[in-house]
Image (tube, rainbow, N blue to C red; front, side):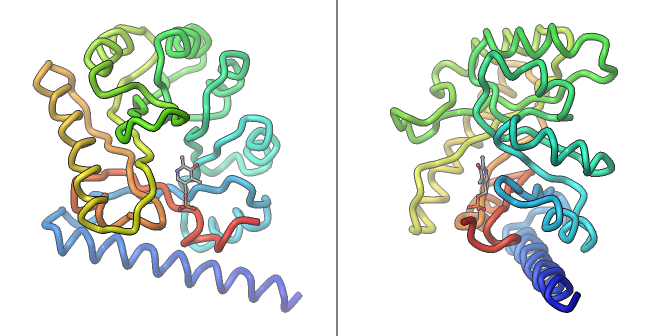
Length: 232
Ligand SMILES: *Cc1c(COP(=O)(O)O)cnc(C)c1O
């Protein structure tokens, strides 16, 4: 069907543009080539559209809601999946079965459940701590001053592997302000390094602030709109 073909071609072009923007930012800010991993944020997208992105060469996808993700992942088992959405205690059992990584751990209770429920499922679950860097009252995430204790507790859990930090800063179009906020996230990661944690992941940067995130050390950028187009 010609219409389907056009959608796929359009998606491939958008994906290629995002990959180019990442490569350009790596070069401009002295990051090694291919040091930034692209995660395609596929919430609200259909299996067909995700498959179209996969056929353009994208393997890593992120989902926000367990209920929505489960049937999609079941149909797209050969792709790699990270959980980037809000964590509720009654959903952790399904999260550990569906996902390789969780970016949004922000309290010990949830981390304990994830670790217990991951037991016997093969590899440990890779996790990032979500930090509420802009201190927004309704934003999930630990406050920066809570990170050292939380990191120590999470790192001690048997079936989790603490990989780094994730954040969703307050939206702004001001590039310098974006950079300042991402720099604060990186500095929180460095603080954990100084306390002896060995961390390699900084999950930050979305469609509107990808360049600033890469300038400040992002290792995983989570991109939805720039790949799939605006969400309905
Ligand atoms: C939706 C979402 C993204 C992608 O946002 P875009 O602005 O569409 O690129 C990234 N991270 C999280 C946690 C999201 O929920």
